[in-house]
Length: 362
Ligand SMILES: *Cc1c(COP(=O)(O)O)cnc(C)c1O
Image (cartoon, rainbow, N blue to C red):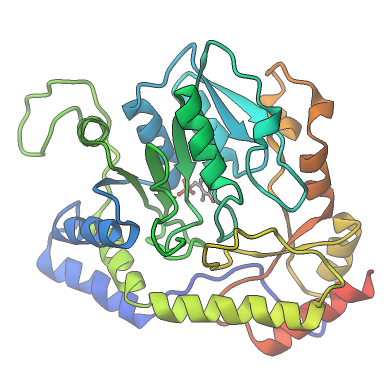
């Protein structure tokens, strides 16, 4: 038996969340309603965006954003080769083609602008602000998109409350998308949000998410749409989570500081954008051989996780035409990166034990 057990993740939910959900039952308005409106308004305050819509989850949020921009068959969207699968899948789901571009370095998770080959079909770039910080080159990506007349889509699923003090992640481009999955900065179990400053894009999203009509209660549908609504039970959870954001920020900052205290400079960390705050989604440590280190940690009751498997290595994307040797930095990130357990409630003993076992493999 290992000395200690260190799970990869646990959601930060408690009785205050439960109480908020209970009130939804009492009100007996369980589908999208008043809590949804309030949750959306609060998210607009947090992001500073002009418009926003809720979605059933972060994947559909990206899908909805792409649809609203009119992206579809024949279009190509450039996407960073290291992200969660949903970034690329949403592009596939609207019938467009994801074009994978390597990251600039193993510790720098964004699109390497120098490696882009634009074609006449390129319509936009999708960046993903990963692990609780902003893409290190977000300003350059904005300039690049403006120069070439491309849409900028920001997958900010892991970047709620990440800003440079003036602008929030997800508001640099045409659309920004968020997820409230169980392990995101705040959770609604499942849920999503898209923000935009463009009135027309917002209007398109409003129709698409609610059966091709502007509001419920009418059976006249000017357009074909979908159902991407969120329940008030979920929005109630979102609101009580928002009320705890300072505890979440403090807790996660303490976790990354504590990992750094024990690991020091014996591992490498993610490159962070210096102008943005940092709320680690997972603390990432880069070692020489992640497989070997993770196997040893697992034997000792710790649950490490690999980095996202780069898109060029995904079995589901084998059908795309790309040169598998064009992604050396993604290869290195995957070979060296480890997601360390990162959740509110993790004790100093668990962190120091995790670090001790990790360091024993170096
Ligand atoms: C979680 C996540 C998504 C998908 O969100 P879901 O709510 O799980 O559908 C998309 N992109 C990134 C970067 C994510 O972390």
